Image: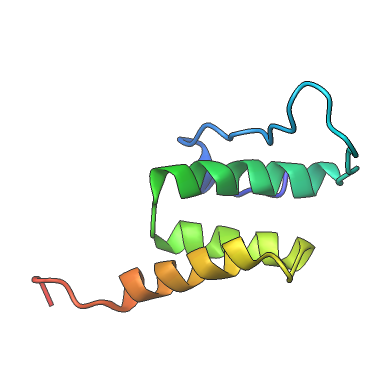
Length: 86
């Protein structure tokens, strides 16, 4: 398992290619695990440090994943935006 225990409260979301995928792509188990958690974090729109770290893991597998880069930027903006407490 490559995903830290900090994600134990998240239910990963498996990729759905439909009942008969035209061309199934074989991914490593680590890639599948990381991206299953990424889909869950994206669905929850969680912009946190752990979500940012998850994008780091996913981008190591596929640096051309534009969705991951976009979400990473959204995490950065959220993490760098001052709050009322600041």
